[in-house]
Length: 215
Image (tube, rainbow, N blue to C red; front, side, top):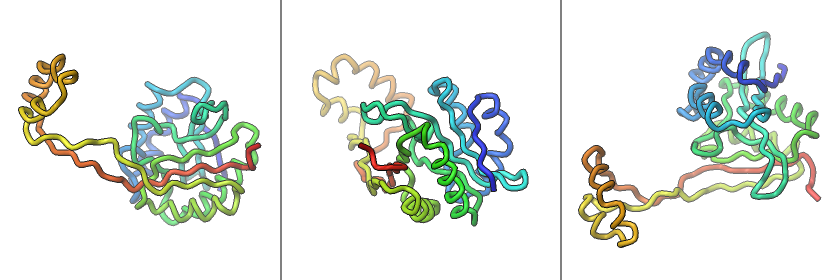
């Protein structure tokens, strides 16, 4: 198995059929792992020169994809690192891997990342679903390769409870919010279905892996 890096939008576009076939074979897939979502996200939000798609291939067959980008800052610090390309405005981020090949994929990927470590200092993996079958392999191989690992097992979902009717919403919302937006609320109520959202804790795994201890 070999690792190849795709760093141009032209190559990204050419991956559509192979990506879709791999995506369809993977039980972890959600719309956020599809070629359509990632390519569209990159088209509108990606920065030139930062695309880093790591492809694992064996005898011309696509085995796995690590859909990464280079990010220049980490929580405000000037720390160039690798992260999922759709890490903003997306949920349920994950690797796309052919079933049964997870362990060898992460072994080869992490070995390759160590070889090119001068380009990045941190691997930030956010919002991987807790139900992902990739997680055990990711953690096992990550611990073996990277001396520094930070892991967060849960994350609060940014939703709030809504009243059952639009009239209740307008009555209960504060004046500062209600007054300038009453017309907008009324228009929205006519064209949308009212739903009650509950504040929940989604089970996501977010982690950071570093190839060396940061000084």
